[in-house]
Amino acid sequence: MTGYRVVQWATGNIGTRALRAVIEHPGLSLAGVYVHSPAKAGKDAGDLCGLPGTGVTATGDIGEILALGADCVLYMPAACDVDEVCRLLASGANVVTTRGEFHRPAGMKPDVRERVEAACEQGGSSVHSTGSSPGFITEALPLVLTSIQRRLDGLAISEFADLSQRNSPDLLFNVMGFGRPAADFDQRRLSYGKVSFGPSLELVADALSIPLDWVEAGGEVAVARNRVRIAAGTLEAGTVAAQRMMVSGIRNGQPVLRFCATWYCTADLDLSWDVRATGWHILVEGDAPLDIDIRFPVPLERMGATSPAYTANRAVNAVPYVCAASPGIRTSVDLPRSSPPSPDQPPAPALASRPPCPPVPSWVLGGHTLHANKAAAGNGVPPGTSASQAPAGQHHSRMVVAT
Image (tube, rainbow, N blue to C red; front, top):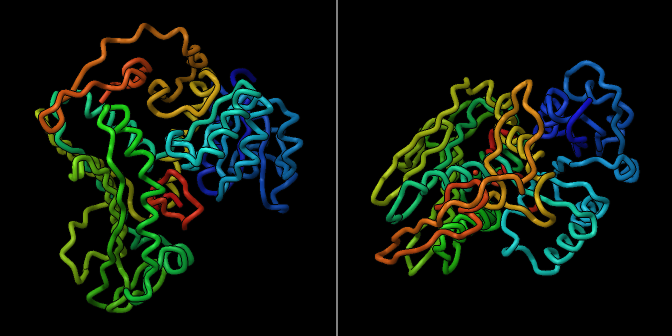
């Protein structure tokens, strides 16, 4: 086995897909697996993800993980434990996570940021948050699309998830609140978008040198006009059948960066919403306007099995670049664009070997010429990627269909 030695931390839907990807990756070798369930401890990693035996057995002992001396840990638990992350980093292990706590260091709680950065310094390690949403759709893609603008008036990202064929009653009814009277819906789920997606919008704004005055979030729900049967159960007429979360980055009193997620179980709603097929829609307003649809060519009944790849793959692909980065909390702006491996592809080169920075371009926003952040221009990213579909405190960078 060659390449970077990687530990998979947690084996839920996203973690299991990441585990398979590590085992099959030509530039990575599986060093260990951390599990929370005693029933999984002692099992071969292959048994946990549907592959042949690997000789690597899972453990629930963090001490055993630290003793491995792995190059990187793919950290994918249901909730982030800062103490765990700091122990991993201080031991010298880099951390790539689908947790959303590290998208923008400047937005972290000062004491938490200080602890994490101290652990990075102690271990000579880095930590990076990534995923599909937030991540790919809110950071990587916007930075690329804005690179062809000279005047940027605004950027809006819309996410759509048709959950009608998702056979997960607990997720839909108990966690997300579908099927309840609108008056009983917990609006905190929608306002939590400020925590889930705000850091991504602010990171992009920083990279484009258009600092936001503030970020605001909210949302609304729509109810079913008629009784409808979905894979997870039945929605009665007049109960919540769709929900929309909106996050806006405000500058000079106007929204310049926007993210809107619409999750629905039926399009037969009491409100006239723009309800599209599962995927993303990106609108870039400027002197080189763009209107882009991204669709997932997968039958709805297979989305639950397919969609974890959108989140897990981005994290796995980031491993070589995070391992090569200088110590600290590293963002999508700091790292080069990651790519999938080919069978004969060697590990990613050290960041220091990249070519010199190109000239820093500039944009005009609202009549003012603005310069791109030098970090964005010089680190392989063209200057300027589901709700957190888990409940508050369980914030993964993924679409809801991947839960």
